[in-house]
Length: 132
Image (tube, rainbow, N blue to C red):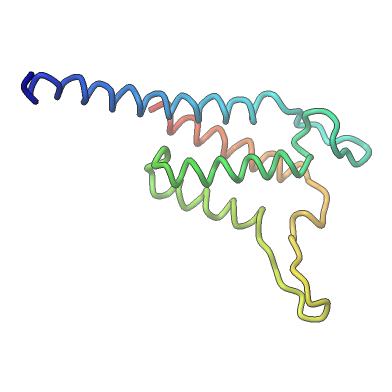
């Protein structure tokens, strides 16, 4: 068979692959947005429930935001910058000269209502961008 015969098939496969990749991220971000509680409990929670106050949720969110940027899922430069700022804010590590150790600033404090609102807002922006 001639090469020209396969070109439309290859082109469609690439389009289908891109759609599948975007759909994967849509599902991930929807899960992060809707499958975890926004409420802040009156006590510290560790490995129980699906709460956005858990540091594991923040790790997962920042990881997928970075991955969406790296994979080209997010193409808008303004949104990319917002993601980079967000990830920096929630993963920043500072070195304490006196204690000779690194400190994860966000991990040392409790999650606030403002943190959750900021995360939800960014997830919604990313989902709107992907759905375009």
